[in-house]
Length: 359
Image (cartoon, rainbow, N blue to C red):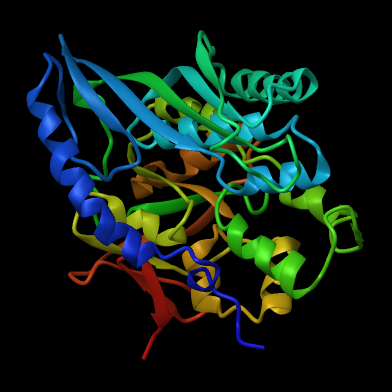
C-alpha cells in the first residue's frame, strides 16, 4: 500500500493557493473602501485595521474543519467549540493583540437542541480559557447543503474574532536578528489541522473504530482526536505585558514549523531541539507509512505555538511562561539565511510550505 498523504485524500494545497489568486484579486481591492485601512497585507495570521489615535483593531477568522466529523462519529460535541475559539484567538495573538470577543457561525443539518447545547458548552469553555466574550452569532439550518457522517448531525462551526493592539506595538517579525531565541509551547496533540489525513489513516486504512480503546492513548481513538486545540492566550499575554522583547509569534497549524517564515524579516531558523513526539503522531505515521516530510508539513508535531524573543530576554520569557503553568522549550535560534529556511534536528529543511531532506 502506498504511503498516505494529504494530497491523496483530496486536500490539494498547491491547487488551493493557485485558486486563491483569483479570489484575492477581487477581495484585495476592497481595502480602498471604508474609512479604516488595513495595516498588514493579506496572508499573515491575523490582520489589523488602523482606527486612528494609535488604536489597532485586530481581526481573525477560522473554523474547525473535518475534526467535526470525528465529533459526529462519537456523537460528542462538547469540545469542538474550544477548537473554534483556539484557532481564532491563537492567530490573533500573533500580531501582538489581546483577543476581546468572537462571533460564531453554526450551520446545521437539523437544529437539534441537545447537540447545540453541547456545542455551546465548548464555546463557553473556550471563551473562559481565552478570557473573551461571545456577544453574538448566527445559526443556519441548511439541510440541502450540509451532510456529515451521521444522519441529522451534519454541521459546520466557524468564528470571527476581534482584539486590540496599539498600531505601534504590532508584532510581525519585523525586527528579528540572528541569534534571537525561538521558544516553543507544546501542543495538546493533533489540534485542528490534518484531520482529513488522520481519518484516512486510522479509519480507512487501519480500519480502526473511533470508539476503540487505544493503549497508546489510554482512551478511545476518537477521544484522542477530539482533544481540544490548546489556547495560549493567558501565558502569551503575560509575556507581552512583562516587558520581554517579543520579536515574533507563530501559531503552528497547517504547514507546520514553516509558519515561522511568515515574518517580515529575511531570516531563517536553526532548530536543534524538538519536544517528544505525541503518541498520536507516532501511531499515525506508522499506520499510514507517512513520510517525515509529509508529517512535518501537515502537523504541528508537538509544537503548537512559538515565540521569537531577544536572546537577552529568553530566560525571563521562559520564567514568565512557567509561572503561567506552561512548559516552554527552547527550540533554537534565528539565523542569517538568504534562502529563508527552517532547519530541524532530524535533517529536514523547510522552505516555503514544504519540508525536504537536506543534502
